[in-house]
Image (cartoon, rainbow, N blue to C red; front, side, top):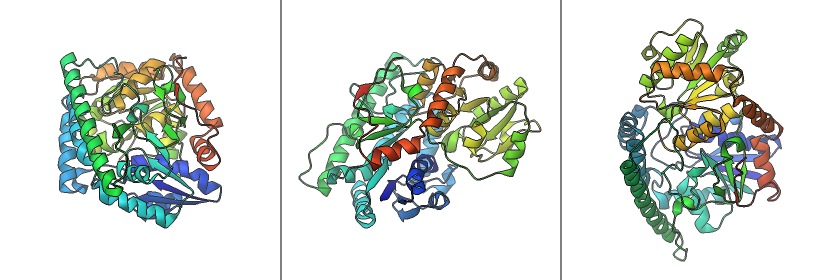
Length: 444
């Protein structure tokens, strides 16, 4: 059997997809990954074959730096980072306007390239990142079945009554004005309509007989594999399409002597990461450093694109590096401080670690609201939360009596019993067994 994995050229997307594919690799089957050149070392590290399929103008192999992007992508990223310094609504509005260029980059050309890859590889099963829109356009138009992997909050695939880019829930720390939200909702609707027009036009170029879709953001493969824990999905009442909740993808990471030396120290520590993109917000990271220092706890901090010198006074004994093995460190962390990205959230929940979430963009707001709702952590506004507020939240979450800790431990145990890659393999390799038909996520 051959599995084809299609991913944008971003480490944060490829890592969970590649981890799912390890179930096929470990069963002795062939795995081919179609992606761009930046993440080629990741593909090699997993022991997979690779075919070249760039799907966007941007890329990153683990840490996003604008100077490493082409001019248009660099300018777009700079404007995005500037928007995050304003507030939630300007950031979401900027991202909405950019979607017509960054989600369907050269759609007809990239769709044809994707179909050429499928013809060449001749896969028995296909896993596609939901945000690989040009590739999914090709598969949808050609009537090729694929497993649709949704990374992030499930609202990344909008259901009835939702519009892509407009969060269905908000953390308590954010209080945008009603007129701001109304304007954002109208903008997201306009972008959705324009995106459907763009999708339909590209689809007709591939097949003039294709039927138009009303909402291209809502188009999906079957089954849908949500890289998301049941604990966080519970209680929001959203009706999902036929799906599997994978929980998380706990990948193996290479041994690291510095990390193991840090872990030999028995005192508690806080793990901090703002991912490959939002690590540029060194001002917020510096406030987090100040807060943790006041608690007396140790910290392991992935600085990403922020130079360590910008973090202020870092105590001796802390582990501070550009990139850290997140899964390994979360296995022992007392608290995780995160921007609310999919890998950080799912991997923390998968190891029973409560979170302080400082969301900046996209589905991070809905994810932070879910974390609050089920007691898996606390959400604060990154632009306005003081060091004292961050310190208070970290202390509360580090308390062994934190009320949400039991639910997190139960979820983590369930994921150990049925890991995400095993669920994905069972779903795509045999039959729809394990796929939940369209349902409302239970409220308890």
